Length: 156
Image (cartoon, rainbow, N blue to C red):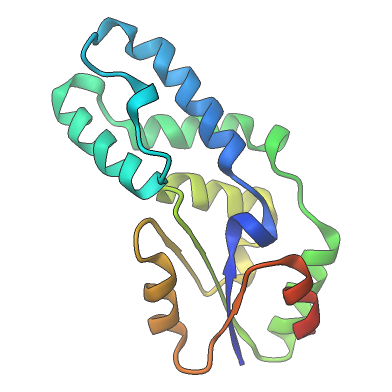
């Protein structure tokens, strides 16, 4: 069996950490008048594409800034869930292939998976637009999509 797990809905929601990082960079971008973080799309994949365009206009390497912020702040926002970690351990021990998907940018997803203690249980983490589709292709036919903690527990 294989399971594609929604990182934010099942393992640990990264949206508050993302929002606070945006607030942090908004303060730093005030000197770049034409760039308004409030205008970023709610969809994080689309926001990442916009940030990539802004990087060319002077904001610099936003992915490294996000990674540093996430590493510093993740313990405040994300706590490992012993029940979810036990379910992942049991599934992995039974030979299940596990992966996670999220619309969050890669640095945030990677730091979150490490902070939540699930990184070593996941064969793959797909991020951004089309993440679920790419993960399903990686894990293969018959992969179960898990969108809630209850759905994950039901697999064990």
